[in-house]
Length: 86
Length: 461
Image (cartoon, rainbow over all chains, first blue to last red; front, side):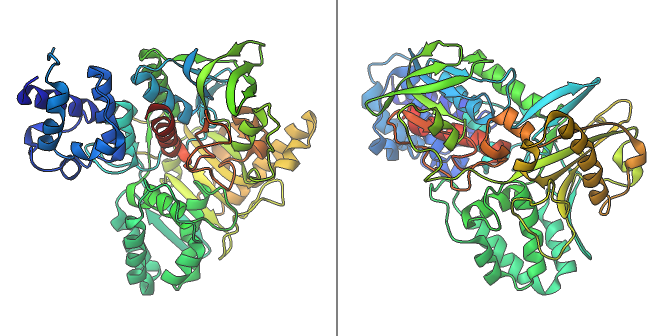
């Protein structure tokens, strides 16, 4: 997946976690927590969704990388480069 | 072999089941009763639907709110706000001798009421609100300091302190006389700062949605399936032996049966009550069906918390029922789009503290007799605070502490479980965890949150 495809995938996960949320206004560089009021339970869900959909294992120490869209995509890029978006 | 076996199909067990099934675990919920819900049930009697447990949902934040326990649990269960179809309360009240404080889902009403009744306490109350708002409920450690001690420092009017404690204790304190600060803050926010609401169809809608979701994700639910014991080998649950003789294997077990009740199931001789005594607080509830909506009799309040004394005594009742205080709930008095009953009937429920040993000790005939005697006494006590509806009653029902035992299995009919909670849900066994009432959160929203939290912490990570 390219960076853009990874971003679309993360947006898809976020829309799953927060179906009532308008994600079109989401700023890539600003934290999810600030913009969407996500808490630690929601971050676990981002991790679990990535595991469920793409078999990607993210160790607990790496959760900090999932703070914003920019940092998430950067963190996932090497892990998802060989995965095809469906 | 299941990934997780869950004991109990109440709110917490079902919520945990949804989380695990959603993430592709093989999950089975075993429920010994013939129906789901546990403490929160529903039934049909002489052609009418009734709820047990639920008066109102707490933590009601409006659709679209991102913060707070309700928004969090909807996200976690992948449910939409509309799935619970919640209508907000009309408005509730706390009534003590000479003082009546109204509140609804807009905190400003409560502020104004306190300013009216206790003008000297307005600033102090604002300080209390600020402290309560700051408390972090995802932090595992409930601040264990005494809420009575803290309130005594913040407010200088003892009557106001008692009036604040009354609803919070009735809706969620397993501990007698006092609450810890963490529990107080959670309850205060859930009732006064967020608010109360109810689905038009009552608790059955919530349970139906949870079961539908769980089954839709491939979860298995076995009713009439009681657990006989948890077979322990080498510090782990090796098998779950059912009352029907069958044994189920699972990698881990999540039990919502309660702490002492779960310990008793373990066949390794784990001491049951020594380190954590079961709770002592139980309830009776009277249910009256009226031939008229309560508001036509001048009663438009959703919930009335009453106490006939300047001080509020939250302790095990010495009488069969404690007539000094109680909670009156009218399920009609929510802001529904259409009336609760098309024919215009109404329901009044009254909850009062009750003595478990008294009710358990009665034989069948005496039990029936005492039920009708105490139905009258509770009603007579309550109508000191609201319009007299006794002449309009067309049907009645009543539950007692022994009813609670039958539906929940909790020792002593302890409505909110053991006073000491096991906040991290761990037990002496590596693969046995608890959720629900004895883990730490109570009420419907609390129980669901507990199930989600324990599933996340122990079964998913």
